[in-house]
Image 1 (tube, helix red, strand yellow):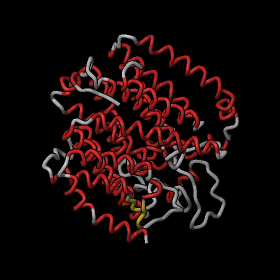
Image 2 (image 1 turned 90 degrees about the horizontal axis):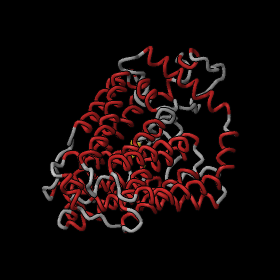
Image 3 (image 1 turned 90 degrees about the vertical axis):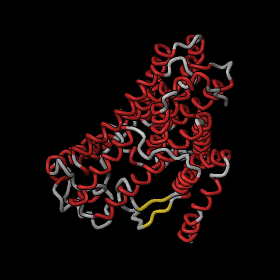
Image 4 (image 1 turned 60 degrees about the horizontal axis):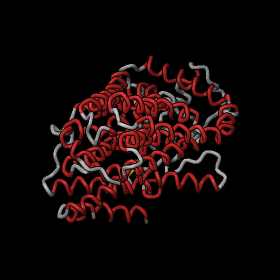
Length: 446
């Protein structure tokens, strides 16, 4: 029944997009619908050719309501002749290059269908990026983007609070895992932290930002994710330095003191739980991470150019393939057809092992391009209303990139969507010739 309903919804995308193209306000609500659909991602996503027991970064040809809303937004922009470009800058082209460099790995894949699941996911991610970028180019509506991000953080904290009251030790909010949640919150939190530092509590937008920042930081802290907690000082600290040194808000010290005191109080209240989380972390978890990293290195040595197959890690880590044995893992047990082993806990080693070193270099270039673009925009937008966007994303992206060395969650759809929305905002600011001028006159209100 769910497949039938989904097919009916998919057939309704073209007429829905045509209706949306008739009114700019409807177009804005369609963009809001894209983010709202992310809040319902787990409930509205469908895996065609599903293999739920497989331990990989994609377990089916996944399509969700968020994808359909993105397609509707793209269609509406095309119908209204306001769609600009699929690949607006070098960053988007690097993403396509990474996708193309992953394709040769399919020739080494034991299961090509599993590899296609990941190709499908990346292709839909490109549509998602194009939808957000072209909406911003067509409307210059940064305010709605900020509202959507804030609403997402608030709803996520509400779900975290509900899980906390239910007795869940590590709540995961709207996400499938607490580590994926903390990555998204550490990405969005510094963005609103920068907004508060630049606008302050006397501004309605500043009050709006501090609320969203508190929700993101609270959810990240309550996850008790060790790497997430360790990355919070990096993300918020880098954002703070950029705002003070480059943004130079008038009352930055007065705005900093209340936040510092609130942070100390919150840390004191949660200190015993945080210490307990680090002290009781199982030693097996750290050992497994090291073992899987060694397995990935064995795969890279055997197939440095094409890898062992996109999304085929969960197959190649088991016998009869030799990688686990060469890395020192126990391979004497009879795992069976549905044995579920883990996955290497770093997106970079996973990418190199599955797709080869060239694909990894393209991934690193893609990530680096957007961070340096953000850093450059902090100078270009200095003194403008939009300065907080690159300043906040510089800190948020730095935290996420470092955490990606210890987690593979950037391959999970919701984290990838959050990342692509931020990249689309950076591309929008970077490709507008009058970005600085527009930023000085833009009125940002909650």
